[in-house]
Length: 244
Image 1 (tube, one colour):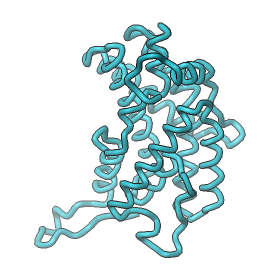
Image 2: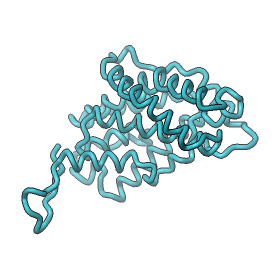
Image 3: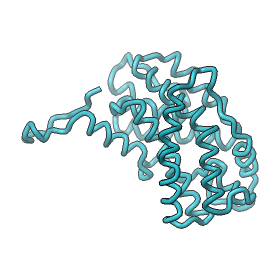
Image 4: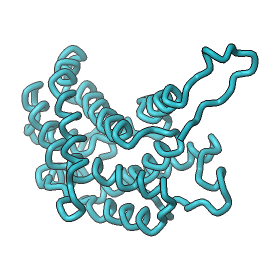
């Protein structure tokens, strides 16, 4: 999808290209400055700190690698590409199916609430930017009612002309950046230590996307009992900074 827009008076040689606008659109979508409230959620990580399961840079790296391998690789990332492909062909049935599949895989009330609230916030933002499906065509496939975050993210990536692989990398990067921001606030973890973990896990993000692209439908499904338990315990944690 070529999203290049002409700039009045600009020489033809310096007109922005579709790939450049897609890249900038992806950067906007995964930026921590995006006003959807992602900073308020820890995805069970704050509870892992409280329980002593994660207490330093090394144990945090192991936790994140495990969540990436057994969670994002087998859940959000492969479903994201399926959703983006469904948006591209206007397949409302597939979009609804995968949105409901993701909702069914949220194992705690906090994780389910995070997904729905971020989805609603991103949809509201896209509406304010006139980037909802209805802004492009009256016959366009609409967002499912109460669509989760991954479903809305997939639409935003598609309408911005972001290639599915790059959308997956951006989604994984946003997850990692958010988790490290949580650790810097609550562990605490120094910013240099956080960057060491970025260097360690960057190749793992690429490997996760590679693996996710190869998975068949019947191979999908997260296996994160520790995260589910941490998230459930977080619901009644006495003192906390984050909503999940």
